[in-house]
Length: 159
Image (tube, rainbow, N blue to C red; front, side, top):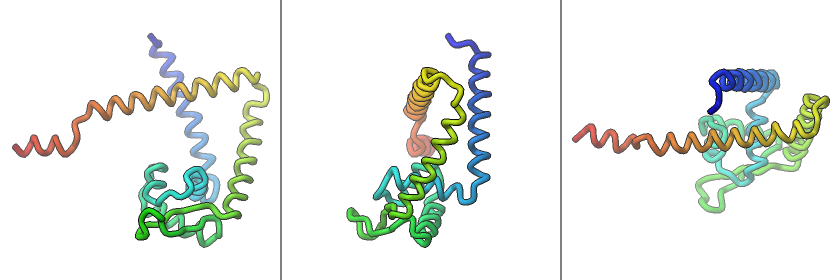
């Protein structure tokens, strides 16, 4: 069994890292548009609703930001081949170049963060972070399965 003090230390470290990354993102102009650009790069041909769900934001925000990115020539918006009433987003060549430049910049920064680490430490942290993420996903799935559906709860309450 994991000791409570160890879990408290883990939580403190995770919050510190997360807060630092959030602060860094907020210092960049248009950080949320950059997140959207990255989401489009990883999910080409996605609808705004799919991108919004992926990013955990409102669809209207994604639609507005996609328009801005389209105006800047970084994203192309075209009708969805599955449903002509909807549209999907894809990166343009300038968008691909920007993602490549930002990825390279980010990789150089992260290399500096761990420059004095042993390669085995980097691999171990990576393994543990993925293990942590799998544990989070499993707990989230269990919690969702154990919750009554909203519709069923209302239906029972109206009986």
